[in-house]
Image (tube, rainbow, N blue to C red; front, side, top):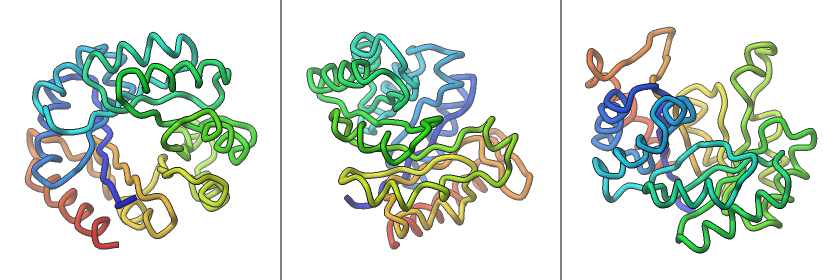
Length: 224
């Protein structure tokens, strides 16, 4: 697939999320993600508001489904999500339930291999059960305890093991994210608020700088 740039709106306020999303869209970002913190703070109302504000953009709802797969996927789809996330460590029955709901509502499923003991086998299992994408995810807490951990630890092996698009998430710099298509992961994701050189960019004070950073990222990814 052609490279895609996705911004994860890891904020806790829908208005701030929409402000960041506006900047991202102006910079050429393709997909918008209602990040887990945003969904915890605002619920599926966040997805509904993003859909109203951006009627033509794909929206990923990162609820990290572990159970009740059909109902959760159905609720996210009805709220306006085009993509949902199910955890690879969930029971396979849950993964299949999410896939069934996705097919009914015309959306797609991303399978996250965070915390899976065997990342490659988890990715293969997700593909076998019908997910559309695999997320190679090194968690925030995991990286907090072991700063050497990175998606690169498993990325090459996962890319080589599946035939569906791969996304890499977790502590990547802007430069590393821009190079992801060259590593076989065309779904490039960047988090917001962005922390670059220890400076946090927020739309209220640094909107133009944030836009410039994202526009540069988009250009690099699209030309990779």
